Image (cartoon, rainbow, N blue to C red; front, side):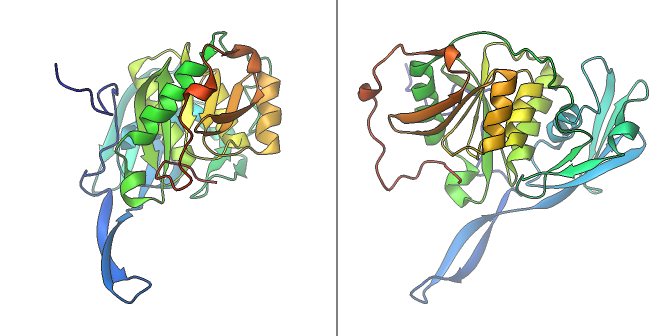
Length: 293
């Protein structure tokens, strides 16, 4: 039997060698010697909902259909009740058109825009807190053994972050298994791609967990909650508003997860201490693992 690789468990995994996502650039290092490194590409992607232009996002260019669907879903412009007739990507025009069978709520949403803290200028249309009132996230356990298994697997997964940096990742997980790993220049784009995949494939949020390489901000908490996912985990730190919203909606929020260490600031009732953290090796001071503060 062959040895399992770090991408074998994924339904969608990063492809650091994919064409057009990075390019080699030559420069000089601190000694004056010529050097060549890979840098991440940024491309505009204009999202249309039916005949209306909604937004132009800067993205690395992979999975444009998932990004468009997830963005519209996370903004509340399309819902589970909307029948999506098609998602058409035009590479030359750098645009995606999402077509539905009837009018949506996008006119109302476009009346107000709130600029968020997301990298690459995340934009939330309408009331950021809309949809959170009365929200009840699924119950379920979050085992420590699963958290440590996920952290180890995800941080070893070949990715654009490890090959070029300057990028964020979001991973949809079930138990101790990572399922879908999306990357982009903004953490909001990465989570929107995951949301778009879930919407497209009809995947339930129950029993799922999101792992992100970025900060646990209000935007990330809101998007995770609106996707119906009950737990959000990161190697990075928290914002106060992110913690406040997570506590309001009952989201399990785990941050600063490095080696044996982590901090849970919300939803600790889901945690199951099914192993001794001392069994987990400490992370070396100089680590190539992901983390963006």
